[in-house]
Length: 560
Ligand code: GLC
Ligand code: CA
Image 1 (tube, rainbow, N blue to C red):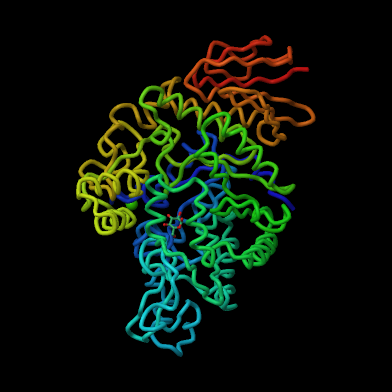
Image 2: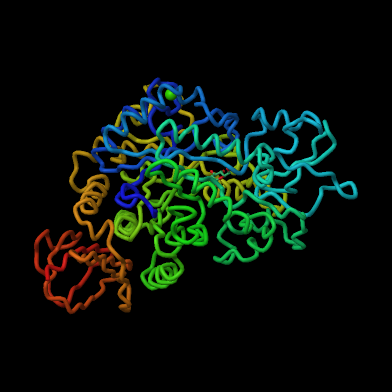
């Protein structure tokens, strides 16, 4: 079976639980906070919630370092809270996806604690241990986050492998016990009623069993720095080459098939992978239901999008169902990323319109609906994201960059704190996230006082919030826009134009992605406006030639 109907019809909303809603006033978001906001989410029209990890964790990587896969971190609540959340979400017709971190655990997970304790511990082979070679690490593999991927462990005199931080040792997925344990984790949550998983850092699960050297001298760290600084080639070919024995191994596809059959034993569950390779759809029905079409983010110009989308569509097997997104907890907020200083709001709206109307399931990142912006830390000491601290140090030591510049770059381009600040609920102390006087876990962007908050936008028909809500409603009203095929029009110029069609309905989407006025000619003389940010209102008939203002959005139905 391909993706279930609820997933295709869905509008997904990513909740970063630490920052979404704080029910007990300790400055940290929690599950009961989410529960209290379900009515709001329902009002907004989203019907799938992807919740970033809330399992017990030492929070070295804010939950992406799990120390117990079948419980809730006390910061966020209890399993009883979770059960209530699932139940109340389901009552509202909403689905819940959990974030499953399969590649690695926290170094404080009891499995790793056991594993590192002695060479003959039964958990030894649950992680990847190797002897050193010539007084150094086993091979030339590196960690994405700096230095050798092999960490020497005094206690047993061997090295363990970690693709991310040393605090996140990779599990040994070639050990059947590991696979069984993680499959049991999946069953634990599926039995509890979750509707599926977003699978974290998926393609790093397997490494080359022969430990072949990458034989590439440039360090992964440098390639990653260039990538984060926007200096790498967009295809990241050097970086991909460097990690060719550490990621995306062919074995992944058999594993995904196994996981898919596990999930298919339950009714109507979904697997969404944090990767973009279409190969992970398998034959369209036997691996993941969805992967992210991340390439959209870097392609926000009509000519580039026409190319990217056309290529992408040609690579997808029948049954593939894309996930379209503009931001998440690892990236700049879309409002900031697309801002040009002049037409920020229109550009942010255009980006949201794109993911709402392309074929696939849109994924909105919490706060995106009110146009939340990146809010940068003020000093290195303030960084809560280790990636920021790491990058600052790397720029200082590897690149010899001055303190001021290294801080600037790390804070503005790498540290992920900026996109994780607390949700702005109202124009009240702490933006209504936590009570007055509480220090929230990350500082709150003061722009909540300037209208960037839910409560004030709810009462304002011109707000970002009401705009997005309207797009969600359009999507829910027109089956062609949710489920229809997609036909890209190969017009010239700055307007991205495409049809969404079912056998009963045809909708034309025009997005002027340029800062200039653009002309569009079409030969259908039976178009009626569904939505327009310009002069047409719903129901207006439009003519053959249309002029669209910069960033104008126009949606129409063909009534023939
Ligand atoms: C994924 C997560 C990211 C995390 C990394 C390591 O990319 O999205 O936040 O740091 O995996 O778990
Ligand atoms: Ca709390």
